[in-house]
Length: 159
Image (cartoon, rainbow, N blue to C red; front, side, top):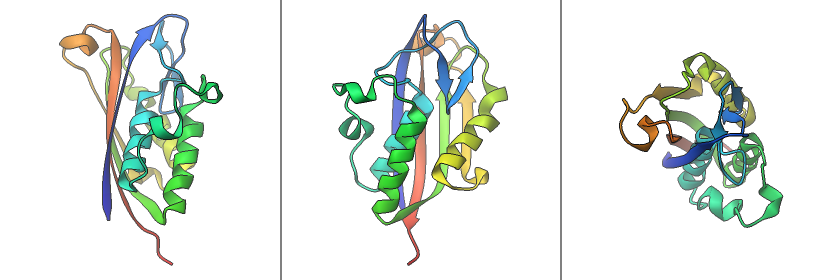
């Protein structure tokens, strides 16, 4: 059994869709990044890569490569899933937290879990997503952006 940890953060700006866990959340702003800036998916992908000792998403999908401009985090997660499998591991469990002041996203968490479990070919019960505010503190609390962290466990695949 191995454990990986991931973190990601992005700032808000207009003229962007807010995508979290592959779900478009209605809001007047979205997160800015080279790809779709899905902080939840990026944190989970980093955690998975870390668990199998394969670096981070910046190593595999550099923001200097136009191929990845505006790419869906779900596509990146699918590629990361293949890296995990090709490394001889399978995902056991994901526990992730999204830290965001607004909008309220608790009603979208089940769809996020379903998206993630589908891409990783695991049971939805193996994906736990929590949502927290920053209680008005700091850059997240003032509504400047959002962050996410994730812990994953993987195990060697049975042969």
